[in-house]
Image (tube, rainbow, N blue to C red):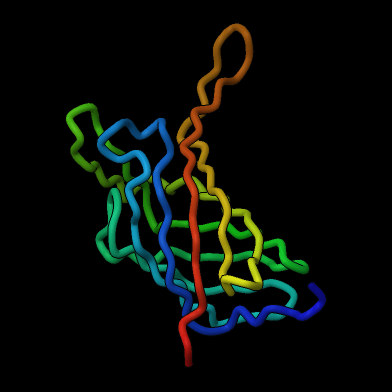
Length: 146
C-alpha cells in the first residue's frame, strides 16, 4: 500500500475489553468517535467514548502516526478513573490516567483500521523486580463520509 491515508476528519469505531476485565465486560463493544484535526507526519485530535467504563463523554487526547498500512497512537484521558471490587467507578481528578497504546493496520477491502490496545494499569515493585498489570483489548474504526 503506497497511498497515504488521510486521517483528518471524523472516525467512528469501537474497542472491546480483554479477559482481565472479567466475564461482565470481556468482549463488550464500546463505541467512540475520533475527531482528527492535524495530519502532517503525525496526527492529533480528540476522542469521545460513548460507552464503556468511565464513559462520561470526556474528551481524550489522541496522538499518533500512520506508516503505510500500520497505525500507532496513544489515547490520554484528562484524569484517572478505575473500577473498584464492587464494580463502582472511582474518579480521581488529582491523578493522571495512564496512556492507552493502540496499534493496528488498515484493511483496504474493508476500508478500516483494526488492531489491539493495551494500558499499564499499575506497576508494583517486589524483591524480584517490577510487576506490570496490563489491561488489553481490540479495536476497529472507519472514517465517516464527509
